[in-house]
Image (tube, rainbow, N blue to C red; front, top):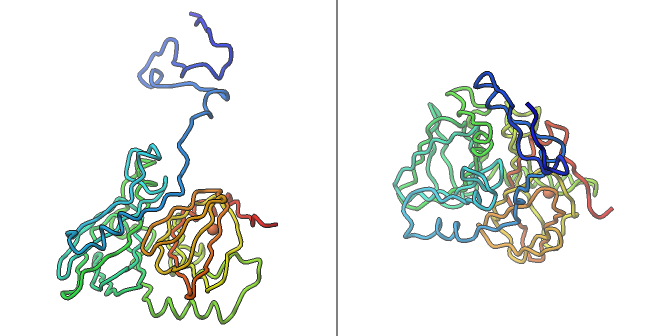
Length: 317
Ligand SMILES: [Fe+2]
């Protein structure tokens, strides 16, 4: 049997089906070509800034719970997502209250914006306070308890959209690619001072502290996919403009008088906002204030390193 083809180019062909399928497996096959397979128009990752979500998370009237930074509709992704592979949430836990989570993710990255308390994963408990970073294995229940005297607000990042993309389940208990890892605020401060004491050449993009763990030491990450960095910027300093294929979600911790330039557009910083740096966009951070700026950055950089496709370059050469 021959098929009448009216299309003038293979680009105009609809998906082709088997002419005489003999089995269900043959019937479900679809055929595309070089003209029509690569012209899907995905909406780009926007250089969005989330400011309402942190305001709600910090509002004393907001009950204990999670607030998503969700761009799934803009990104045309069927699950909640901040970027195609990551999801950011703010967690508010009222004084003395508990919050229980279980994410279908390989791991969870947490930064403590305000308050103190504990987080329990399996047999382990992290006692956290303001400025701490900790990483928890995905796929298991995490129980957060805020201290009795102050409300707590946490910034929580997972790679749930990455697992959802491949329809993967969360790792079983004990099989996540990370154990519980804790980076207390005073140790983070000490490590940043060490970076400034030693100094760097202009061939290095910034003075960021990169978090890793014994398990992930060889790849300098906290998770195979996710890279976590505390970027700091002294007063009067501008980062060299650069680009890379990984995309970033960042929490602005401190940054009066700071702004970012993203593809020529100025983005002023506001404390506790979550800001997206799209992939390949030329970007730089600028501090025109009088204190050291701090920005916690989570990137899907691990996947680009692993696939040898980071595509890093300075844009001013
Ligand atoms: Fe960057």
